[in-house]
Length: 303
Image 1 (cartoon, helix red, strand yellow):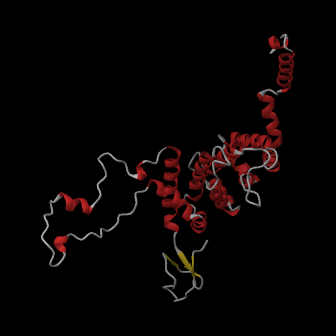
Image 2 (tube, rainbow, N blue to C red):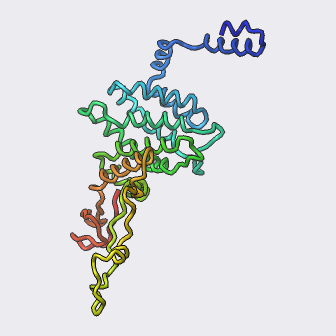
């Protein structure tokens, strides 16, 4: 930069001077850490929430800082969860009242990715033994309509978000953590987004087997005898694909395959919670419209 500042080009000199001024104003890493510590969990969360809709640069730095603080220390993670980090992160990726997401700030992909990865780190228990705070994170996410917010993220399009597929993948991974061993969140998903999850999962599933409606002429009463080894007859029975041809669901790959497999995992996690309840006596049943216990006709899919 000092070499450029001595350039014969006045433009090069001006740019070099500006760069050096910016570099001179940068704080050292230790000083930056001290500044973050002064904010504390509440200050960092407030910084994220108040800037997420108008200054994603500052909000993104706050989301990154929360993720860094919670990455290795379970006690710090617990303090951020209790201070409202889950709610602030969900608020940051919530669509506006009119359903829009794109603002004058342009593409929000990078900011959403930072926010969602931090949210994911808060939802996952790194040590496995003490999962009390992780359960609290799941409770907070569910109460803040987090399942619906994550489902909404699955519908964003690449024409609005450059990294839409990545955002959908992270949203699904958070959803897995949210419904795993959590009945209430599982049932929230069953009520609000089962069709969408099935739609995504079906991309890696083969179609269900179909019953053949073909009846060989030999089985038709009074029909002529037909040689079962006749090539023309067998051709009518089924259309054989050329050897080595892949099925449609085998062509799915990359990010699309990852999201489909995660959606399939979600279906397996919420499956045991797919029961209905009687509004009269509270008896549970796998399905139906009339209660087997009391005969009441008020059967609902309870949350």
